[in-house]
Length: 97
Image 1 (cartoon, rainbow, N blue to C red):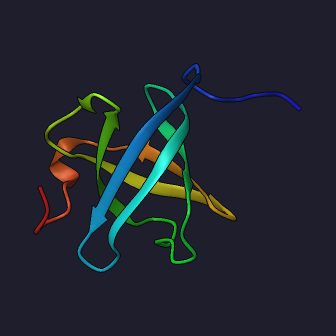
Image 2: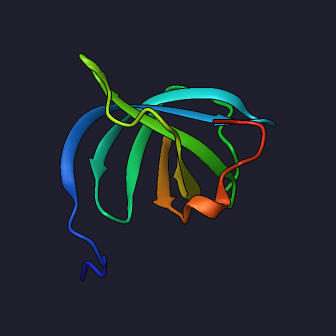
């Protein structure tokens, strides 16, 4: 099967913190990340639906990678893995920082 991805993926194990007014707080670990988005393993049965915009922060053991959250869109779901895509800053979910 041909890989049609626009951006090269990098394997990682970075903590991902996600927030949305209707979903609350979710945490997981990025399995891989690229300039286009991330594949995030989440240990929750209540995942936001495809199309949901989330405010996302990435962190390592020694602290956050980004202090200000970045907007990302849920583009696919497979069991407990969410595919997230970076979106323009103008898409920030209101009520969250």
